[in-house]
Amino acid sequence: MRFTLILENESGAQLNLTTTANKYMTSKIDGLYPPAGTISTSSYAGMNGSYLNNAFIEKRNVVISFEMRGFGVEKRRHELYKVVKPSRYIKIYYKTANISVYAEGIVETCEVENFEMLTKGQISIICPDIYWYSTETQIAEYSQILGAFHFVFPDDDKPFPLGKYNTQNVMTVVNDGDEVGFTLEISGGPAKNPTLYNAETDEYMQILGDIEEGDIIRITTKTGNKTVTLEHEGVTTNIINRLVSGSAWFTLRTGENKFYLRASGGISNLKVRLIHRNAYLGV
Image (cartoon, rainbow, N blue to C red; front, side, top):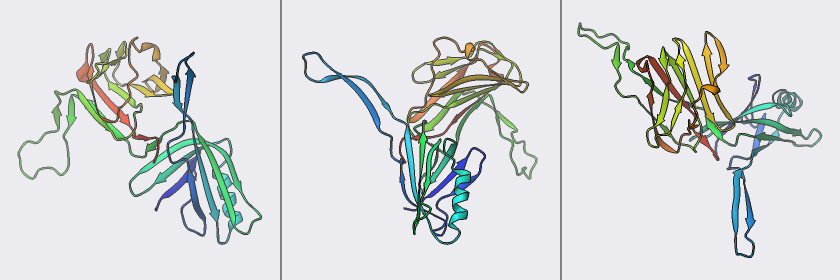
């Protein structure tokens, strides 16, 4: 199977481990499959079977085995060390004919055999976030005025639209991966008490208070990184205290998801973007 494997450090420097056989030749990648699950059970007193306490998925461990051939092995080994540093952040890009994804983690080890006839190496990366994420982003948007201005201009004098008035406040996004959180951006204003509803469950997420013109509220519902922030005149502050009690931290289920917007006032001034990347346990 043909594939591309690229490592990128926190500074943006990249190393392609699938360039040519004379540079880095990746022989094996462990950790592309779903991570192991941990299941805790307890026995019934004097009864057959047991009951489930909890079940969860462990962290991902990506192990890359490779060889270095040809001339200039020492130089390439030093290039490797500049990008792959133990205890430092690393981003793994993996691409085939059917999928293009990335995972983020911390380098555990980077081992290279210096004095063997065939120079072999192994990189171990621990990924606390268990998912592979699509490199492409999906965006669902809501605004009561939809842009319709486009090139090329008509050749005749007939009128053409510069915008369209939107009477539907439903946003639809299709999740082709596993169930995962997303990022929500609410901007525009002035408006008051914006509320996002799940069209199927009627669960809601409401931000209490006013949104002034030019404000941007960003909500992240990703497990382990749930945040609510306000960007006002270039300054970002934490406003999780404005999240109304009873609000649900929405996730996107596999398949089609529909949400709609409400507000106590000024809904016609609001623009909403739902930003999502497909997430996969295994690729």
